[in-house]
Image (cartoon, rainbow, N blue to C red):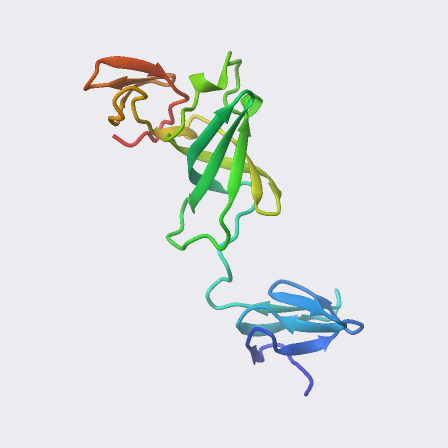
Length: 188
């Protein structure tokens, strides 16, 4: 059976031989055959010699460079903070992969910061922009005023803190101020 544009296919369905078409979006090559990776409708591009499958659900929720993400600071070591990514801004769908990210000290603010713990602490929730993707590992940037810590907890009593300005938060319980890279979108 010859596939035509508009045909509905399921994951694993045969689309063509790899000599006839290259796999496009929603398709993959498997031992000389191009197969569907998602349920959807076939789209054939004769000019580019590419066959794709367009999913009605939009396919898996994968991240790309430029996306804004939310995550939790898991570790701060020297020049890098490690972040577990929980969500992509603008979508309620769960991410397709568990992403782990890093923010280098040079990607935190447009200016100079002496040490990374002046921007992030373990347990902080942050908003950041994806600048590089290597598999399921990401590099993030928080130089924008809307990026940075959106929720911080006091390192002494673990109470949620209130922002003072773009570089400090205040604990109403133990009357303590701490440095952070505070987002304009800080959640009160």
